[in-house]
Figure 1 (cartoon, one colour):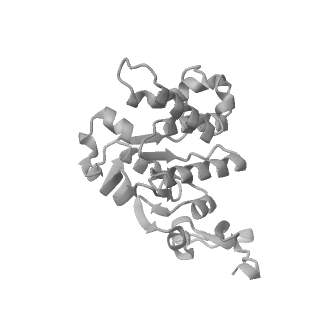
Figure 2: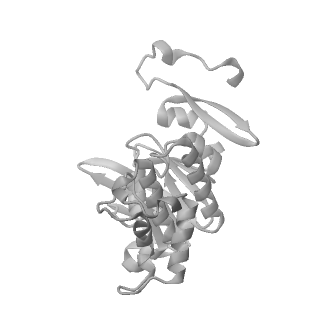
Length: 276
């Protein structure tokens, strides 16, 4: 399955949020959408999930316009984890994860052994099995995000969209979730996430979509998209680069002054000689 978007534009409150964005998500690939604050990343994911409509442009799922898919079919095809997702009822964790199976069941359909297996697998992948009997209102922010990711994974959809799934997590769980999402893609799903951590995007993702001011600056392999020129243009930062065990890493190192701004103080410090 694949998701294709062409010419997406979106305006809210007189502000142009997206301006002619083209993007695609194919089965088996892990894609990061990156860019500075206000670039339109979350808005793009909401459009791709069918939760909002663009002012212009088209979105198709396997060639079928997204708006023409029956809601249940769309829910089975595209799983979505929103940014800063909340749980509004004091439900148990296993009950929350089980909600991900609703699109696969009829209105009064009872849970099946396949549902139970999908729920158990999703909780194991997100290391939330031990939380199964906890109430949602007793969870930390990071625990809640992992539980909601488990709910999205339990859907078993061929396409998974997640908005900042590692933002509330400690480094250990960030690495675990990124590895889990990469493995989900390797098993055949198309996975697209909004991400602020360029190091994680560089290490784990197959493709990076770089947005700035509502436009797509680049779309391709991390090494090509996240070059010095584009990072300076999009973020006004300079970076350090290296590799460990054959895997590349990238570290934002200093701010660069936007056009017309004079840098002073510590922001003028140079890179260490060996990393230039």
